[in-house]
Length: 398
Ligand code: 13P
Ligand code: SF4
Image (cartoon, rainbow, N blue to C red):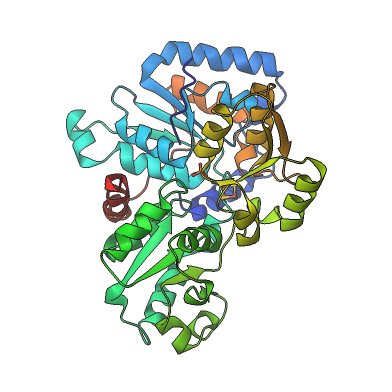
């Protein structure tokens, strides 16, 4: 199995529909149920058998936040950026099983089935499967397309939206990516946010950044933009997202009031405590952390950058890492020559990523082998067309 650090989700309405469907008839036993009572050894053997049988027609992608027992079955693992690139590059595979969250599988569906790729395969589509449809992203759910469209229309009353470039973090539903495609905007990930913002300022005066206020703020601060130039748009405030006309007119970035429930848990006092208790310790965080944590950190970056930073550090280096627990625990196990701590006394794990487990993986794979596609993520043509424009702009930014 390749453990290359390559690799990398859709509308939550789908996830909810699926849940409703699963529970609609209380007397019906869901076909997943028998898998839930199997031992890990048996599940591993059965997953391995399907992987061997399907060979390179199957690609299992795993995000760094997946639990170890799932990541062990991934052909490629990585951060969102690398995962979307590898989905785009897939040549031989017929099916991608995405061990990540819904927006990642959506992105894979869009990129793996873009027109040039379809032409190379004589029109054959790559099927994308998300082992558990309830594996969503709470941050992505904080910005609905109707809310974003309403905000865009409201801000047009006081600023010229022709000069506003919408930038959506990849952690968003495909409909938001499509919004950006339609309005001259772009997608970013945590590894290219600054370059994407620069791209945006070459084309407009302001950025409308959603759904993560922290990534937007932390990135803009590195570009010399001040907090005063970054009003926060609260979709639940009736009047201009809770901002004055002047604040919007003076803005450089309009930040959506969204956040990651996992990274929101890291606090400045955790940084201070670690520095006091372990002199010389370095603080390494994901830019979804709040500003006060990001500012105090020695290094901030995507999950891929966090991994590379530890891999490239000399033995004896002490780290307190502020990102999802499974990734930090894996780094601890893989780098016993370094001293790695989790930057919070509270367990911060991504509960939705954690929904992908061996029973779901085995169930979807065995169905696939038997010719039944369960939990397919398929973005509709119109949304695909416009999201692809925004995603291709991102992939072209270096
Ligand atoms: P990366 O883009 O760094 O992989 O992060 C994805 C994510 O969901 C972080 O919470
Ligand atoms: Fe979404 Fe946060 Fe989970 Fe990342 S860690 S997938 S942003 S909820």
